[in-house]
Length: 629
Ligand code: ADP
Image 1 (cartoon, rainbow, N blue to C red):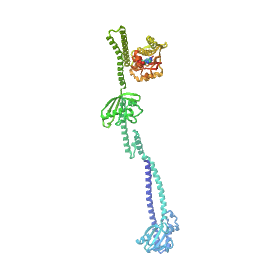
Image 2: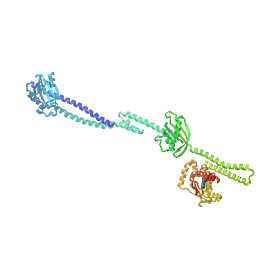
Image 3: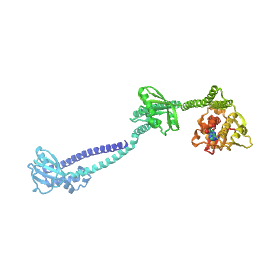
């Protein structure tokens, strides 16, 4: 813009100066010619007067030369200041021509060699019109442009012609023109300089407009053209209109941002994962929960992406397509593979029915993994319980049936059958007790019967309890405790239950001469950290957290030299009803719930349970509990 203006200014100034200069030059040359004509006319008249007075031609010409040499003003040129008669004689030429065109006199000399001049333009015109005539043409003799002034001399009926080279007078013109030319150049430079210095002021509003428009395009809606009220240029109206437009944009942008913020606040406050897709199943927006849950290191909030990249499951796309086709909300349940593991979702795909947004589908995902798993576990548990109860019951009913049908049985056999019934009934009792105990722990997130007691004393008590049983199985119980009092705060019965279950197993799944060590110590920092991580998954309610004071974490360890457990089974060991050797466990009166109970009690005390085992060498069970005072 600026460049074009500069070019335009220079072009206009130069053109104006050239046109003015050109016109001036033409005008000047005309004036010059008129002056020359006058000068020649004066010479011719003077010559005619002298001739008519009878003065010989040569003398008359010499007089004219003299009078012109004495009066240079007639010529009016600085070059003519050199007005020596010789000079005037040199530039003036007088020719006297008869009415027939014969040259009677020529100031240049010999007339004999001169041809008839009747056809010379000025001569012809002067003779024809009987008055003066002028002609400008190139002289063959002098090889330069000459002005010929022919005066018709009535008295003698001849022509007095005076000529002079145009150049002699043009030099006057050239010097004059060069002054004009230099002035023009100076004027041009001056004008261009003035124009350029003012250009910045002239183009300033345009620059401001340009800069503001650029800023607006780049999203700076607060941009305005400054000092509009001071603007006196023609662009004032445009600047005002621009500012109003920028204000309107800023306002609408602010409203848009507000709406987006409201929408995002609403979306983010929803517990479900929300994804909105367009008619081509590209993600239009999604709430923070969905972004975190699906992760996939994508940023659909910054640049849209296809739904499939987010969910990585075509079933979600199919659901959206069905909702779009049928024009109504469609609900379903599905398990999706999320970056942090499989989750079960209740999914609702709702099509937007209003016109500009037609084709858009709002997908809401409700995470029902916990209730789904709980439901699954419940049904699995019911199946397991039914199965576990059925075998002792079948056995009991079988023996009762035998006793009833066979009256002639020996007393010894009857006694044996009754013993078996008793064992099975006892197993039933254990089973029911364990189930009740487990459900009590599961339903109760905290222990209500908290007391302070000495853990070493409790361990001793349990060891004494198992004394006979260990002795019968030829297993040695070796509690490794110092004499100090180890004060803990917990439900004593539940901690006792842990010890009973672990020591019972350590004796049960042991061999003759086997050993069982029982120890207790403070947990290391990394062990505590593992508990924290585990705790995060359990998610206690706030009330429960307050109920559980922040106690020291201790580790109960029961290590045996027993049968050991195959490595591939260790992971599932703490599950309900999980047994490594089903028949052996049942034979030994196991319910398959002992370790599950241990794990659940540990969780009650913000802890966890672990097992390390080598088949044929023995096992180490550790229970981490936050119960130390
Ligand atoms: P059970 O009532 O069958 O003992 P648990 O839940 O206490 O049920 O134990 C689950 C299974 O873990 C047992 O069936 C047994 O196979 C195995 N088990 C538990 N403790 C030990 C141990 N100390 N040594 C070897 N195997 C064990």
